[in-house]
Amino acid sequence: MFCLSDNAIQSIFCCCCSVQKSTRQVRTQTNLKNDGNSSEEYTWCPKPLSYASTRKNRSNRGCVHSSKRKPLPPLPQGEDHGEKIRVMALYDFLPRESRNLALKRAEEYLILEKYNPHWWKARDQTGKEGLIPSNYVTEYKPTNLEIYEWYHKNITRNQAEDLLRQQSKEGAFIVRDSRRLGAYTISVYSRRRRNDEMPIKHYQIKSHDSGQCYVSERHLFPSIPELIRYHQHNAAGLITRLRYPVGSMGNCLPATAGFSYEKWEIGQSELTFIKEVGKGQFGVVHLGKWRSHILVAIKTINEGTMSEDDFIEEAQVMMKLSHSRLVQLYGVCTQQQPLYIVTEFMENGSLLHYLRERQGRLNKGMLLSMCQDVCEGMEYLESNSFIHRDLAARNCLVSSTCIIKISDFGMTRYVLDDEYISSSGSKFPVKWSAPEVFHFNKYSSKSDVWSFGVLMWEVFTEGKMPFAKESNLQVMEAVSKGFRLYRPYLAPMTVYEVMYSCWHEKPVGRPTFAELTQALTDIAETG
Ligand code: ADP
Ligand code: MG
Image (cartoon, rainbow, N blue to C red; front, side, top):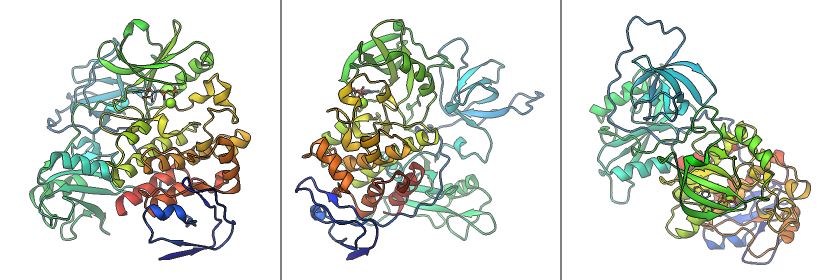
């Protein structure tokens, strides 16, 4: 099959052969059938992607709540709840200081005051009051799907399939957000399929003209919980009835925005060092514990490597960035030298290392899901007008449940090393940088989008070095002339189109992260 197009064309920069260049604004021809290694040999012309502007209002909860939920007890009678919000705890929360209130999963609380988006004052049913992390609770009303154990808000198709496969139980199911805003999908495990078929089936919950919802048109329901309840007892068109709601794997507590409200200074005595896990730009990174119970990463900042005062000021802003796809900054330890930065600990280390270690063992669905995780975290940074400036696989980390989170956002601003800061320096990440960055130092969310395209390329090559054989200077010249990275053979054309769209020479020509999230979800759902 051949594709003809009149779009602005950039040649593909091929690592395995010498640099090639094609004329722009020309008609090119691509053999789309050729899906293997030989893709590197072709000049390819990307279709402009049509992005629906459908930013999803995603929650920041990456982990899902566990099963065996108790029925909700009634609120105490005769109390004036006024405008106060009733919430239900999704996780247990142990108080960390006297101001905190303990939370017990599935119990109900009243929110008295929202101190900031992340820490709220709440009252429990015995009348005790205190501060709680807002991402540990959800509004308690029947229309809020988050109160149901089968609902997983923030999960990719691939992660849903993994979760169900781990259960391998006939009729195990979850409900998740669909790629269409406000729509939902039921994912269900059943072995009653032909051998070559996946044991997991995905059903869209559709809306009827009457406003009711359905999976099978003969059975309409006023709400999703009612639909699920019905199909828990009757297959009625599904491959099996929905037998087992699958919650989270239990012990996965999300990180909080700091250890408590406005607590960003951490005392050295609160930290225990366990072992060294890596070495970075500023110094050694340790696995450690905060107050002997929360696992943390402790980054040592060697003297003279960072403009410390500027960072300490900014740390208070960065701590308020809180999302399930960002490595959470918990606080800083500044009362002594060297300074320490304390963050969420990520059991599986850097994404780059993770990819290289598992070469040949990661399927395309997993690779796409990794890109979706990063894209979602970047969408959050973009919506907060926060620029990463050094997005790359080496700056993403992998959790114990293999979720990818973005790390080191904004940190390059505090590096004291000319080799790293200056675009002609040997450590400057030229190969991840947009042309306006290496020419004019002009950073924006759109320059992050360029780097995201390169990160997608790293993911789909299972951790190869982009432009491996070229020097930084050669890459700057070639990229300025229009050369781009080739299609990794694990990347289907649809995926390559998305990464390629990130490399438009002009920032305005690149998609936003919100649009990229949508494009990647579409591919994950439809292939
Ligand atoms: P730099 O300051 O140069 O960006 P990194 O943040 O990349 O340093 O840290 C160096 C290495 O330390 C990483 O590649 C990773 O292996 C390990 N590391 C850093 N942060 C964490 C973390 N939060 N959890 C687990 N390992 C980490
Ligand atoms: Mg790093």
